[in-house]
Amino acid sequence: MTASGDQVSVPRGAPSIVVHDVTHVYRGGVRALDGVSLELGPGLFGLLGPNGAGKSTLMRVLTTLLVPTSGRAEVMGIDVVREPEGVRRLVGYLPQEFGAWRIARVREVLDLLGRLSGLVDRAGRARRVDEVLELVGLADAARRRVKSLSGGMLRRLGVAQALLADPPVLIVDEPTVGLDPAERLRFRRLVAELGRERVILLSTHIVSDLGDACSDMAVIDRGRVLFRGAPRELIARARGRVFDAVVAVDQEARLPEAVEVVSRRPEGVGIRLRLVGPAAAMPNGAEAVDEPGFEEAYLAFMLDAGRPVELPVEARLEGGVE
Image 1: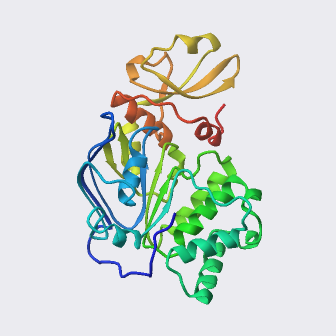
Image 2 (image 1 turned 135 degrees about the vertical axis):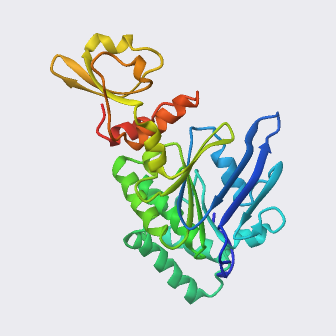
Image 3 (image 1 turned 120 degrees about the vertical axis):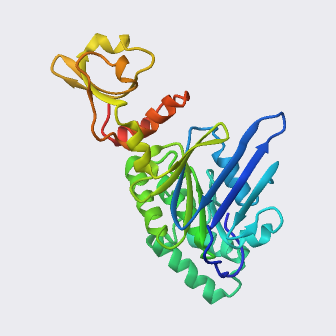
């Protein structure tokens, strides 16, 4: 899906996205969002949280696909409920499940979506299709059928369609689910490059998706924002909560419930463990890690909040774990 219409002037001097006390309750009483308030400026903003945290619901509110039960949300000063058409002209959206016509060719898909987005001039539309194909690294795949694309290429096609109208705001929902490590890395580089010129809101449950380009983020769970700040602030909170320890093979099973194992690797006749939890619960000989990783910091934060999560397998494998 892509926002429709001509290029618009971007208001200056104000946050690009404002969410104020937004709540959404689905039928049956499920409270997906519970008083969420955020202000986002230019650059890449990461929305991090486990599956079911409310991330996709917030994305749908901001893209006018869902009307919040209460609260207010604006994109570039335009209210998402009162002026949905104006918001759609400002926003490019890559949903979690992006699909296109499997037998169509890549260029055909973008050409049709460009027409639906209001790019009525044929020559101008063709130039814009060429531009976005080059931007996302699919220029050589323009004549390939969608069904022949890899998962990573399909996600890049999704980004291409979201960029057709050159929107100042890009909203990306769980972009790397199902991609292999190389494709995830390629996708993160693309998003980092795009974030230099526009606002990008990226939601994910995979911590490493945020990468080095993310300087501002929030952690959300059960519809509430638990943390807002820079990734380095989350890492600073984890100092004294992340440890290295070498233990006997059978000792891992006897670790207290308060201790989470982040990674393990053989060492001599035992195993070296990276552990997250309170110092008092650590095995003898455990040493605090001076510079915890981002994934470890997130896990430590969620444990302290009483909401333990398991790092996705793909995130642990990407770091050379297991």
